[in-house]
Structure formats: structure tokens, C-alpha cells
Amino acid sequence: MTSAIADALRLPSGPVDLTAIDPDSAPGFDGKKADGKAALAGMQPELADLQERLWAERTAGSERRVLLVLQGMDTSGKGGVLRHTIGLVDPQGVRITSFKAPTEEERAHDFLWRIEKGLPEAGYIGVFDRSHYEDVLIARVHGLADPDEIERRYGAINEFEARLVDEGFSVLKCMLHISADEQKARLAERLANPEKHWKFNPGDLDERAHWPAYREAYEIALERTGTDIAPWHVVPADKKWFRNLAVGQILLDTLRGLDLQWPTADFDVTAETERLAAEAPVR
Image (cartoon, rainbow, N blue to C red; front, side, top):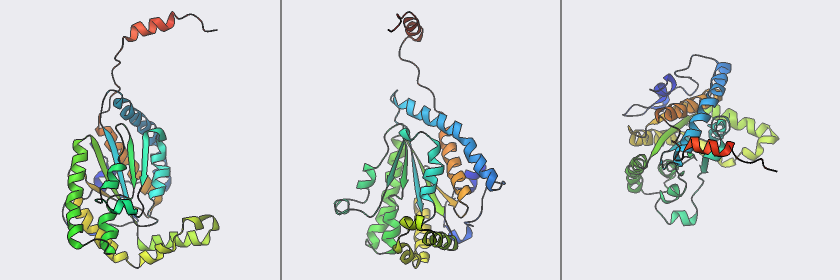
């Protein structure tokens, strides 16, 4: 059973129109900012417990793991989700992989080659900060691959994600949906604050000129790669607090749905308890 937030954000099958989804909304949640922050903080004990169960199951041979894919335009808040939402669980059980422009070695292989190398092992919550979707987004907008190759990649992505699910992955895909106006405000904030100049990239302004092309590329990718086993959630991202809450709720719903159990002891608990009690004092 999923939450009202997850249900409201999950994309149905069919054509996608991002202009019809308000980036400043909070679907499935009736509270205000303070309520949203409190709700996210309130998830921490259960998220931590479920993550520990996922980690513990691997000691009994479980192959289950979670892969959270975060996609979005610059300033949409991928880093904020990592700090405020993923930061609620034990970092020892998290693997974060950020994908930048491919290296020369990576370009010499199929586009999924480097993605395979970033996959989390059993028991982990893996997070992709950008992902294989860059290869049908930026590649489409800037013509970095032939149209036929980009067309092939949609099918390759679906086959790849289906294989991951068969291997024990739960694949969560969140598109952080920010408005052009809000992005402009966040870029202006970075420019106005010397402490945030390190976060500013002049190339971000160049990319803004391609906003309509990126929107179209996202709409096509969302439609072509949203499946029953690896659906997309479009998360309104103008409200940072709701963005963080929404991703947290989707992750919590997923972990709950796994029905994670503590592994049964493979030793005689009573005998070991008695042996420990009878142990001579350590001096």
C-alpha cells in the first residue's frame, strides 16, 4: 500500500505534459512547511529501522537492494535530497554515485557501461545523482548521439531496469520538477552570496537557453521509460521542504513494501547465552 503523496506523484502511462504539473504544488499533502519538515523528521526512526533490516538480510544471502534515481534540471535539489532525506539513514548502508560528463574511457563503451559500475551491492540503498538518463536528455538536446542511437537507448534502459528488478533491485525514479523562475531565483541567490559562488557554474546560464528542449526531452524520456516495475514520480521541487518529504515518503513506501525481516539466527541462542553468562571475568 502506497501513500497519498506517492500515489499523487506517480506518472500514469501515456503522453507526458510537464507544463500541466505545477512545480510549486504539494500533491497528496495538506500541511504547510513546518508540517512537512516535521513529517520528514518523523520518518527517521522507521527509515533507519527498515534500512538496517535490508542490510541485515544480506548476511543471510538476500540480494535485495534499492536504487533511487534522481534526475532534474540544475538547482532542482538533488544535493538537498541527499542531505535532508538520504541523510536520515545510516551512511554505511548508502552508496551515492554522481555522474558527470563521461570520460574518454567511458565514451569508448556502451552508455550503460559506467552505470553498471555504479550499482549498489546487496543490502545497500544506492542513489544516482544524475544517471543513465543523461544519455537521452543532454544527448538529445545537444545532439551528442545520432537520433537512431538515442531511440535505441530508450529500449536499452527499459531492458536494463527490468534486469535489475529481476536481480533483486527496487528501482525508484524521481524527476525533480523545478520551474524556470525558481531556477533563476536560486542561481541569483548563488551569485549574490560569496559563500555559494562555488556552487555556481556559468554553463548553467547557457543551459537555461535550452529550457524548452530539455522539457521536451524529459517528457519523451518519462513517457518512454515509465514502466510498472520502474515507474517515474514527478516531484514538484519549487518547495524544497516538499521535495525532500516526497522523496522520503516514496523511499519509505518502497522499504515498507519489501516486508523486510530480521534474519533468523543460525546458531543456538540459548547455548550461546549460557556460555556468555558462564564466562570467567576478564581481567
